[in-house]
Amino acid sequence: MTAQSNTADTPLSELLRHGERDFQERLQQLLIDPDYAITVHQGQAQRRENAYAQLRDLVKELGKASDVATNLPQLFALFDWSAVLATDLIPLISGHFNLASGSLSTLTDSDSAAPYLHDLDDATAIGVMLLTEYGCGSNIGFMQTTATWEDGGFVINTPNPRARKFMPSVGIPVSRVCVVGARFIDAAGVDQGVHLFTARLRVADGTAAPGVTITQLDRQPLVIMDNSVISFDNLRVDRSAWLGGNLATIDDNGVLTWNDEDSQRRSFASAISQLTVGRLALASCLNATARASLYIALRYAAKRAVPLTPTATTVMADIPHVRNTLLTDLAGTVARTIFGNAVKTSLANSDLTDRDTVVSVMLAKHFIQLHALDTVTHCRIKMGAQGMFSANRVADYIGVCHAAITGEGDCHVLGSVAGRVLARHLAGKVPPQTGLHDPAVTTDRLGLFTARTLTIVQEAQRHLESGELADRLAVIPEALELAEAYSAEEALQLLHRYEHLPEIAAVRDVFALHYLDQNAAWYLTRGYLDVAAVEGIKQQLREAIDTLADNVPALLDSFGFDDETLGAPVLFDDLPGAWESRING
Image 1 (cartoon, one colour):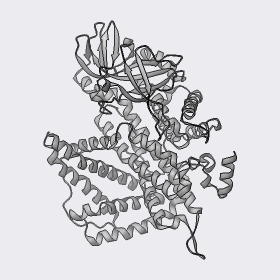
Image 2: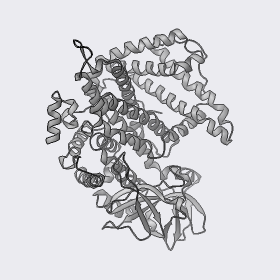
Image 3: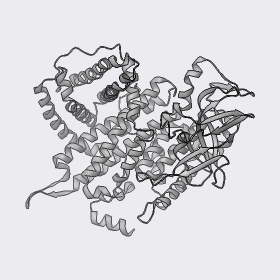
Image 4: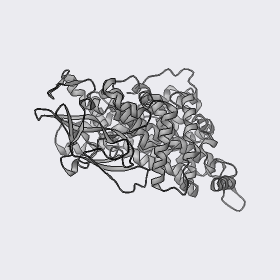
């Protein structure tokens, strides 16, 4: 499901980056504006206010929010660099650029969108999307908020407490243009399913609009957000506020007519199409935090002297538990960067309602985000006390990872859904016959990846044949295994395409051998490896890590980070001086 690309003469730096370098360099300079630097004297309330001010300045410098929202390479770059350099911005850019501006730009005609986009484009109003509720969580097909046709427009209501919108960021009193998910109840009282509507939840002076109640939630320690609970009591919105995605019409009597049967089938996917973009953007930015964490931790580890005896000193990077952990994480992160970039490229020319497109993004989110959290966490721990402080950035990335992973509920849900779809889609493919493979041979390694993918597909079929709840639950572990296995196989295929680059060949070997080592028991019990092969994998992995270690400087350089821009004290040779400058600056 990933895009094919021409591998000839692709330099390492271009392979690991996505989008225009000039735009990314401009973003970096905007995001490190000293006026928005976080200090020890700022509480959560001040940081929230600063984030909104920085968002407005960012929009002013970048131009129309809708232009960035619909230019996917720019949107992905905005997510990536905000996550690395200005973590407090991530919740705001997601709502403003992607979910609000993106939906209005793609799901209605220009005349209907114009009054709202006018305010979003210059950040006169801040955008966000309201989907999740107490009762349905992120399973938004079961939301209960209603939008009833009345007098030529819509009236939005919260029918019971469990239908309150839980936790969009609208707590701070600034003008708001929001996209609201609700069940459209037509003039005949028929429930036409979930649709999107544009509404001004807060007017120009920041007060809640008539019919809207906003209650700010408790302190959220992981990221700086003004999360709220929102309920509606006869909130009126214009007919033009309906975001129908050109799939249907609503006449003057409130009767909805679908263009055709296919339009009705695609309507829900169309309504949440910007979620598909947002899922990939958030996966991308977590991968960016993983790369930044590795850059900081590995650069620090290479210079951090560790006395082991009165006469023997080494550097932290040579300590086995540091070296092995960070370099296997590096291989996994580079593999997922290439995998993610391929999905980004394919998304630019895809129908966002197409099943393969939606599933490919679900897979990417599951495959990338959980690994990014593990990588950032490992970097924080391996840096010891230095990893605890925001000045060295890595600790702040943990909150961003947690927020993105659980932004739609536990992202294992998306992984299990995608895995179940894959199990049905690949059901006709037969796994290779059981037989011993040689993990020292690169083609045999790829064969082992394929064998695991297709065997899981075959084993999952017994649960897919039944519609019973017990089977639907029982297939989830296999669906998650399949989502991981399929994505890993896709990533390894991509790494093989770029094996002419020595750095990628080194990454490929560590990535493949680490995967086989992690799943050794699975391969043993199914007859694809024997004990001697499993023992051999461990030795081959050690040798592959040694080779990757020689390529670390080139890989880190290719990430496009700069010590001065990141500003982490651990990146500087004079660590005490860097901290002194930071404290007194």
